[in-house]
Amino acid sequence: MSDKARGNKSAAKKASKSAKSTTKKTTKSAAAKTPSTPKPDVVVEPADTAAELPPRSIDSSHAEFVAATSLAPLANPLRDRQDRRLPHMPEPCALVVFGITGDLARKKLLPAVYDIANRGLLPANFVLIGFARRDWEDGDFASLAHDAAKEHARTPWDEGVWQRLANNIKFVSGSFDDDKAFDRLARTLTDLSDSHGIVGNAAFYLSIPPAFFQTVLRQIERTGMANNHAAGGWRRVVVEKPFGHDLPSSKELNDLVDDVFTWRDVYRIDHYLGKETVQNLFAFRFANTLFEPVWNSHYVDSVQITMAEDVGIGGRAAFYDQTGAARDVLQNHLLQLLALTAMEEPVRFIPSAIRTEKLKVLRAVSLPADLRGNAIRGQYRQGWLAGERAVGYLQEDDVPDDSTTETFAAIKLHIETRRWAGVPFYLRTGKRLPRRVTEIALTFRQAPHLPFAPTDTDELGHNQLVIRVQPDEGVTLRFGSKVPGTVMEVRDVAMDFLYGETFTEGSPEAYERLLLDVLLGDATLFPLNEEVEASWAVVDQLEDFWEGQKPFDYRAGEWGPPEADRMLARDGRAWRRP
Image 1 (cartoon, helix red, strand yellow):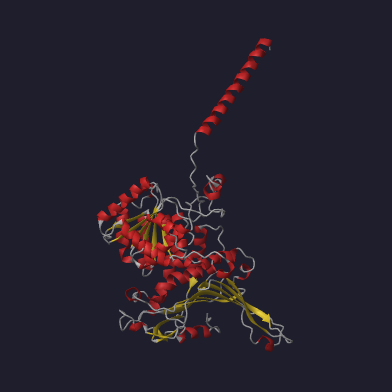
Image 2 (spheres, rainbow, N blue to C red):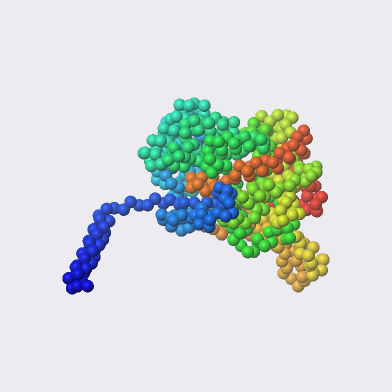
């Protein structure tokens, strides 16, 4: 190459380098002058499990599978739902409550909204919309909400927090069959997308009797408010129990809800699943090597799940007399506790994996072939409770004199899986029992051999693990220990864990946790429609057996009818007395 050519090549390189340097400086300068737009804290959820993925062939490519089941890159890793370093706040959104003037809204929902806000977990532009027949303005509803939240809030009252909430409170007046009222509601949500930046995000809470579900859902459908695509954001619906009256009505309700909303956007609330101790079952079982190895038929003798109430039916006679203890409590609360107690470890801690394992348990439930003596129901009569006379069920206001509705139910069942083969599960619930308590008690088998003299172990019973859901949330482990002294004497002692003593922070109320989960789109604690239907399949068998039979009597203040005690006595067992 000639000297001239070499010189030209060198000059070209210098010019290129100079141009790149100039471009780099210009870019940096522009970036310094132009304020950057913060990236939204968007979390892309992983696809849950095969149950939520479309069917795929075995020879699907590995890359395709990874793409479908892996986390997408996150805009901000600190907002990852798997990262607990920062609390998780919903996107800007609206919560629409139908039946806002009812007891549930006043005593639970409105206080829960305030408590979430008081913990700093609601976005500044969150909007609360009430819908009812009252001829109110926004201020009238805000006044009712203020009084209800202040009276029932869990966290300390802060007027400043409330005022920020009150600035974003709206009210829509109208009846459920009023087309114009729902048109106004739809316009309100559209306007809020512009004024508050909720970008179409809204959850609809049906705090109404089931008889109105169809009317309200069809109105939401007619106005396009259930359409995620048209709204430009997410739309969700929250359905309160009862989820039907039996299996056919439950399927009808599920079909209706799924026809208006996509199944992913339906949240069926069972408030028991929002309780801290119930959620602790996941940690207790799957985060400890101490308990899970003995959580099976090789070591567990029996399981008792109790939900006892010391109150009567209050002013709910119209509802309760058509429902009874089995439909009101057994079908949902108790069978959900059963599923959480007996489920296998999920492959991942994500909603679909957890729901899948719960559903397996509910579908494996088996009732005895002969329900006589294994399915007991009772009805409280006059008695004494806490030193006061309590009237009988038939003397309650608006209860028919010839009512055969049960206020107590106790059943024995099995779970036909390898883990639980041969282990009886005893479930009971009732009103006007001696105290209010909900607990899960696992009784373990006795040691196959005791080297002590029989007189040394007269007071030694079975090891027992008791999970207290309410009140006094915690866990008790009962085991044998030597009594201090010069002789070998072994008897039961108890080791207690109490939430209130171990943790300084207070536990959120159930509705507080569940409402926040709805706004976050976390369905972990909400049963699927298949779970609901599997539970009804169990309860319908009981209701068919009980039809035409009169319930056994028990006095208010007793632990149910004697027949319930005999059910366990025949098996050589006895109910725990909490």
